[in-house]
Length: 308
Image (tube, rainbow, N blue to C red; front, top):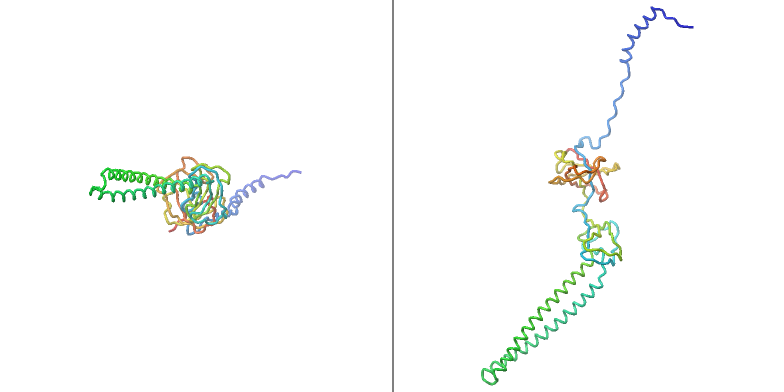
């Protein structure tokens, strides 16, 4: 059964559509605006710049090396995180040969010292003999040849004594050199600090100048941030900042911008997931942390805040 609509009914439906269609748009519910993302800083201190950074220690870490080739005989035990005093022995090389050379040098110095003492005694007797002969020869109680022989003997002994003293001094210098080499068989802490890593074990051979100990001085932790040079005008020394780990743990540490480098250099840390290229030019900014709840070498994100 078909529904038939008269011409008058169709006209009425068309008029109703024209009237009601605008009302549908008027009474359509207005969508709610998207909620704003939570700010990363306090409302009074908006972020003016951000940069990747790395946790370091004031003064920087050091890679310590020995000054001699040798075989490691001992590695000093240490507790991780414990602060060692300046001069603490970190490791030793096998020094048995050096010790034997020192002993031989000490004996040689003793021998040379005995030679000097002997010549000094002989010269003293020759000078006494010369003093006795001079008035006798003047009185013609002794022949002049005897006096000339005594004078020649005295001069000879004085020359031998001078050479012996030079040899003794050379022996002492050699002994000091061996003592210095003996001291170089051990690696000492240059200042109070912590040993982060020792890369050798007893029995291993090491070469002179090869870093074997990673050392950090007992100093406060800092952050080196690599700020894009285009943002340099937005920051200044003394301004506050926030520091958070690179993976976004949510733990934010307050910091303060302490130093700004006086030069521009290449970037070493990636920013916003971008690869590091030679075209990335950054300024190193050093920040002081108010809380040392970071690991040395940890990568962080630094957000510079407006304010004093």
